[in-house]
Every structure is written in structure tokens, then in C-alpha cells.
Image (tube, rainbow, N blue to C red; front, side, top):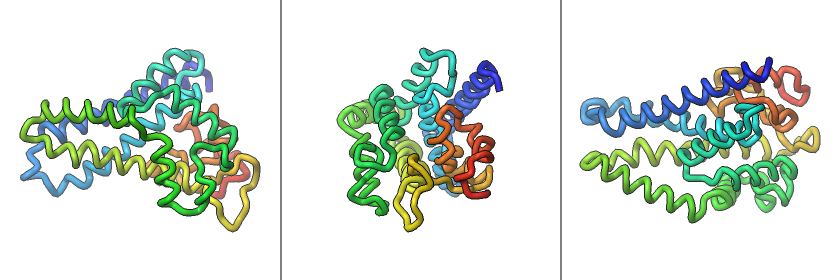
Length: 243
């Protein structure tokens, strides 16, 4: 696939994720009369959680330069916007940490790995959370929360359900499917130095769980492949279990 077409598809998909995330959030926070529509709330939270995951995955492609391969400035601009909207992250710092993760995957030098708890979900998640969520994130989110609360007025409590909760759940979802399952230590050893496993999920579950990053060994072996092409790339990865 040529670079221009890859860029077009990547940017269109990124735009769809952004518009869906912002649109659903606006409708849920400002427009829906939830006293009448409360049975739909869990579905809205679930979809918004998934769209938060999508924001981060698009930014992750930008970190690898796969969103717009020949336009690095565009990559950085989109990446900075998406991680800011996700949780106030610093794109450049996030990029440095992520590249270190690829260089030192599953070792003590890997910022995403908890060498003291290589198989335990909760301690590892706490370590992971502390690694990436610091003063900058608290400050950005506090400012955003205040501005949104003022804009919402009497509807401000809805922020907890349709803004904060999906973001928190997405962090758990990203960690579980994109870090913990691929990199945790199991009885069976890793097949190579990437120290990563793939889930072998079929296309739809793969998309719903983590925008295809369950194909994690493939991602580490071919980090230039954008998220939406990972299922095709995984078909040629002998380390991936069959779907």
C-alpha cells in the first residue's frame, strides 16, 4: 500500500475516532435527559471508553510515525492533540518512554514493565499508572474539570459518569490488553527477544478490545505497521496463535 493512501486512511480513521468521541461526549453531557434515558447509560459509557482507547492508539501510531509516514510534523501535531485530549499527556515524553519500551521490552529498563511483579496485574498496573500519570496530568485534568463543570452547571455531576469513568476504564483496558497480557511472564517462554505475545483474537474482538493491539508480537516485530493493518500483518507472523 502506498504512503499517500496509508496516510489518508489513517487520518480518516483518526478523524472518525475524534468526532465520535467528542460528539458522544457532548451529547451525553449536555443534551440527553438521563432521567428518561438512564438504561442507555452503561452502553454510552462502554462506547466512550472504547473511543478513549482509540484516541490513545491513534497517538501511539503518531509516536511510531505511522499515521502520516512522510509528514513528521503532522504526526506530531495529531499525536500531541490526541494525548492531550486523552489525559493531558506530554507527547514527547510519552514517545521517549514508548521507544524505550520497544528497545528494552520486558526487562528492568522497560518503563512499561514491572520487574518486581511480572505476572501480577494490580501491582503492575499501579506501577504503570505512576509511571505515566504525574503532576502535569493532574493539573491539566483539574483545569479541564473546572471549565467543564462551569459549562455544565447543574449537569456537572454527569462528568463522573460520561467523562471521568470512561477515561479511567480505558486506562485499565489499554493496560490489560496492550501491556499486561502481551508482556506478562507465563510458564511458556517468549518466542524471541521482543518478549511479547499475541492474543490470536479474530478481527472484531481484536478491534473491540484494543484496536488490534492484541496482535502485540506483530506490532513489536513490525512497529511501522499502523493499527488498522495489524490483522493483515499478523497473518504472516509465525509467533502469533491462529485466530
